[in-house]
Image (cartoon, rainbow, N blue to C red):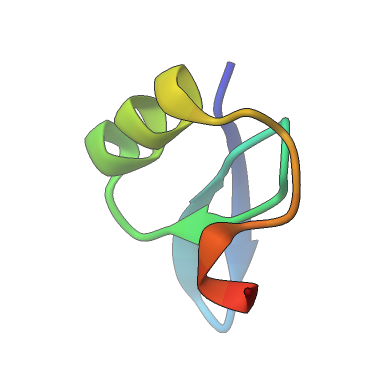
Length: 44
């Protein structure tokens, strides 16, 4: 389930598994479906 939050007068959607934030709820939902809850690959 994607978590909705507001920051800097914008609505953001966060992956509940890893915390990565998106400005589009569809992008967040798609990411969360494929998220393995480990460190994001972009940090490697």
